[in-house]
Length: 417
Image (cartoon, rainbow, N blue to C red):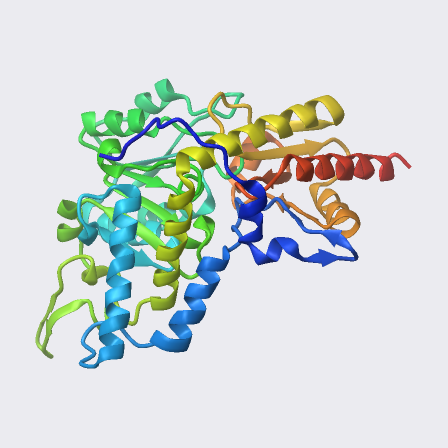
């Protein structure tokens, strides 16, 4: 089990910012204020250099290559899998499957586990705060199997209503899938308690960890979840790679998600037998460079310490919320959960979020996300068409939040006339 609750240490933010080349650029002599980290994070020089090194000196397909370059590339690829397993404290590296992102990881489980286990009138539970990536795959499998999708509600603070969630569970419930952290509300769900609830009723649980992996210490053995998924580009690696953790007992029973090279044991025209996990779920040439870069990214944040990252980002969140509340009374923060990650979604009455984002970008070089954040059902529930969202990483500063406040004041000033 991973060591938890270590006293956080102060991060050297000036030194950290120098590790991210993109943060030094200026547009119209304005520094970049990047506050869209919930969408994707920037990349440290160690990740960039690792990609360059691989492409320059190590590029080769992995597995089965009977020459030194392929053997070296395979070794680095396997090492990255072991790093991921250690990062989330998986029992063994065979429980780690590489995908092209969290979206594909959820689709893999919905298609493979769902198609072979769900029957007509079975029920799958998700929550009202889910990203489309944790809604649509379950809708598709429901259409194929005639299972039914049930939605666990949230309260006015944006917190999951656990009593109502438990009421949804019945003898027809076959699966529970929910986010660790909401990408709109910032709500940190009590997933260990929810996993225990599911297992009490013998229901497997998948956790969408896209927003949690960059901020939270994840221990899948302690959590007890059946599946855990996250994307590489949100943990300071590249796009094109994601992780699915699955308990080996599930993975061994699940049929392949895709077919092709590398996921087979033996192929004849009459019959094919399949490789053991994880190879069974990694058909074709894998994202080798991206996987190796993911290993470098996990090394970087592990070296900083997730407990230190979380403490610093919590302070940033608190400062930003206080500044918005005190200095921008026209703004309404969406999502006021007691346990919350470092992002703020907000609306300003009579000003469309797209106008907010445009002015912040054009006049202040501030990057925020605007829109429905791939959570249209949640927007409908909140009765807002869209929000603006500022999301923070460990390389952000209070000074950048001050610039955001200055920008929001300017937005309000423009729309007064």
